[in-house]
Image (tube, rainbow, N blue to C red; front, side, top):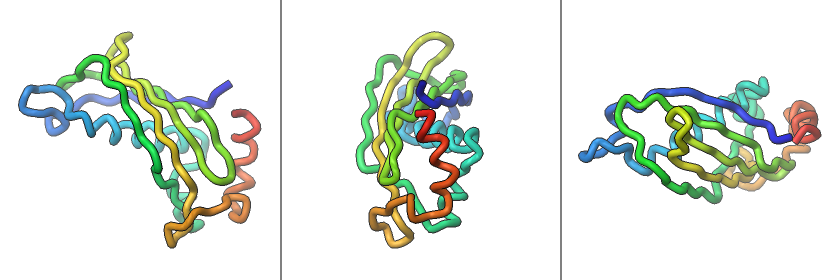
Length: 137
């Protein structure tokens, strides 16, 4: 069973282009919102990683756009952990307006230390909280 989160939000005017359609790069921002909410729901807000000197750097991102989103649309993003290890994680995302799939994407991340170098999370206290999550995923 994959760990997942469902986040609702409304498209802001500033997220649209001159044609009234959501600018493509905003989907990557929404992926980050979904990822942050997923960690928060797991009682592991991103701030806990940062307090220990860890970051989760994006090394790959993709998005497939299927239908346009527009200003004031109410959207839902479903975020899932596809894979997580002591070195990194990958996530998938689906963005919906009602039952209509608008976009789907994926991001791949590596854990990094405060100097931006790859990190092994097993060497950090947060590992004890991540282990049960890894066991479920």
